[in-house]
Image 1 (cartoon, rainbow, N blue to C red):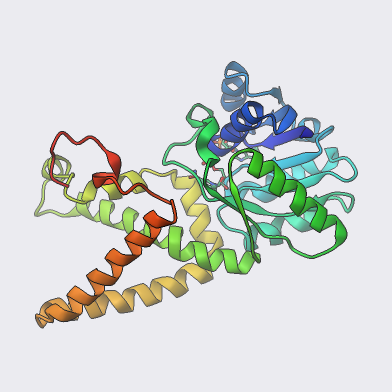
Image 2 (cartoon, helix red, strand yellow):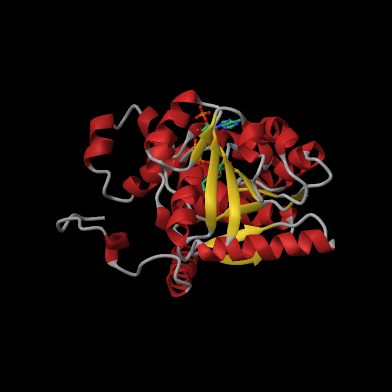
Length: 306
Ligand code: NAP
């Protein structure tokens, strides 16, 4: 058990950590800070922990400090909290991009703090403190991306691993660069595609918006859930994982062009083989416990087509 954690940024992820840490007993006490006075008021109303009006004051006695702000706000948050950090404090974050956060935050921290970036592969399309819930990290991966292999960093990785495991997560360790490429494929590109499809459907003149909404069960609805994610968070993800996203986007565009060609020339075998490969990947995701095998993601659709 950690004596005291400080959470900087009390939105979906910060509030979920507070709930989960209390429920699991992972931390004896919880301090919180958020730049937004309205969010601080909600964090107090929800009894998430001791809410401070100042970042440095919030982290003063903390053994573990977690930055839970958008990727583009990490440096500003670190700068504000750094003067309050005690010797030996472990500092981590939950940002969806790792190399840019590591580069921006590491130089701003005092030498007596130990920084190990991290990313919980868990979330929803909602944001803000009211969206937080204790079971968010249960059965989900938490990726730690240590920047070196000093004794202090190894100890911090072990402490962070125990903390996140107590919250219900499973731990993986990799370099920040590796993380950014993997997540560009599994998360960033799918979000970009969802944002694009949903915005395109809204723009299409030949289909009225009411028809798009009315028939949304036919595949479109699942894209709208992903596309409902926080615009600030996702703007920051794409601005800060530019290279990896452009790399996989290039590959995606080439493959899409090949699909377009196969449709144009009636190459049924090409289409079938690709769809079959994709279907097998879905089975692997279910076998790995990352989703339910229930039809329509377990939704009760009242017999609706999907
Ligand atoms: P969120 O619900 O919008 O919460 C972020 C909070 O941080 C907001 O209350 C925001 O206030 C506050 N904030 C912004 N700048 C700040 C600063 N300089 N100091 C202190 N507080 C500040 O976002 P979230 O979904 O929890 O995401 C937080 C982080 O987790 C992001 O880095 C994201 O990439 C990562 N993440 C998100 C998910 C997900 O599914 N949502 C999953 C894994 C990781 P304002 O709203 O007033 O700006």
